[in-house]
Length: 146
Image (cartoon, rainbow, N blue to C red; front, top):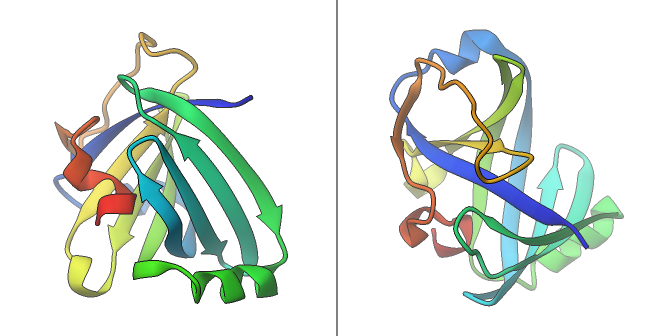
């Protein structure tokens, strides 16, 4: 069983770009999207993934992610209902922690959101200058609701 604990923030400037150690092209869609569970299909560059997530409680939830063949992921994306999200993800290390910053494309542009995964809900960390308002728990910023 895997538990994901993360915090989510809006991004107020593009200062993260100069700090990024890598970036990836991501496409994702949802086979199921309910508050109790989501099933996501994702391609990241030329890799495919399926992820099952449980209901969020505070800033934590169950998460199970598995790599699947890229061609299978592309076919599964075609089965997804609703929008296929496209974004560019930047990976930034700041004060010993990894941040994932997503620049959404298409009609979701110019939305930019940063996430940090934490070992525990009460873990202390330092915010970089590019971080704005916290939106952890705000369902309108869940990728499954975009």
